[in-house]
Amino acid sequence: MKQPAATKLPQAGVPPFMAITAALLLVYLFWGGTYLGMKIAIETIPPFTMGGIRFLSAGFILYILARFKGVKRPNAGEWKGAGIAGALLLLGGNGVVAWAEQRVPSAVASLLVATVPLWMLVFGWAGPSRKKPSAGVMTGIVLGFAGIVILVHPGSSSGGSLDMAGIAALLLASVSWSIGSLYSRKAKLPESPLLSTAVQMVVGGSLLLIVSLVLGEWSGFQPGAVTLRSFAALGYLIAFGSIVSYTAYIWLLKHAEPVLVSTYAFVNPVVAVFLGWFLGGEQLSSNSLTAACFIVAAVAVITVSGKSTSGRKSARRSASVAGRD
Image (tube, rainbow, N blue to C red; front, side, top):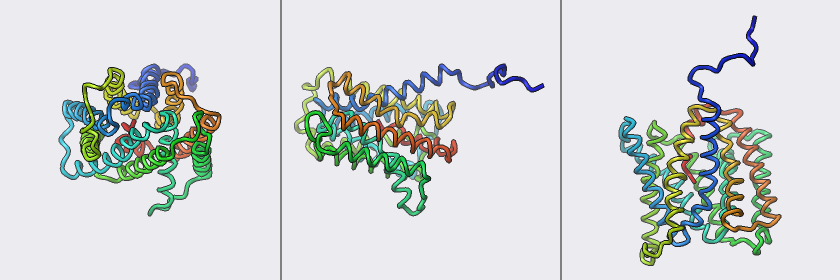
């Protein structure tokens, strides 16, 4: 007689429910908190300088960890591929987000960055592959663009219209992140996701510091003037935003269903909006909250629809771009 499902024993090697839950919470909370963390860090640290220090530090730590685990050194081709991806993701993506947060609330920044899956689908549709989105994905695209229109509409923030230079920068950052994500899928990268991310962070962090020098951030930057509050935020971004949460994400990719892991894409903006209001004192109008609902719904629809046709391999491949926040 077939054993009832309720009495089946769990398969050997399957991680306990609590471990997966804990890892998901780390990704949800720490990645969601990076937007407020950046907002606080750039109060007394220039944005590109802050990003360079953050990713260079985290990159070196992850690189040492990967080598300690026995991962072989990347070759020249892998350095090049990871370097280009790091430039698009961390310089053009994360660095520009940090700059924009000087002008817009962290909650708004998180919502516009949450549109990355939308841009990736648009580029994939318009690109050489001409991959036509499904009805569900198309619904998500429409919802996402509707959310952007509502968000940038005059009066979308409690203090008046949002700064359009900041909005434009965030949209540019989202596009850069999307292009970097698509590039990383076909680029020659280290086989180890941990090492791949480490190399991207090292190169991206170095480029951020170079840009900060070119922009003259160093000339007016006085380390002694950095507040304890900004130092603590930078430490949070390095330790929890880039190392702990990414390690938890990599572990989840190996032990949990991809659809479950991908939920971070629409949970992070919700966490960011709440933290910006609760800890950052940011006030959002009804327009902004409505836009948040549209954008989060769009990401949820796109993620679920896309994952229903994707395998575990593609989820693992995307791990190299997961350390974005």
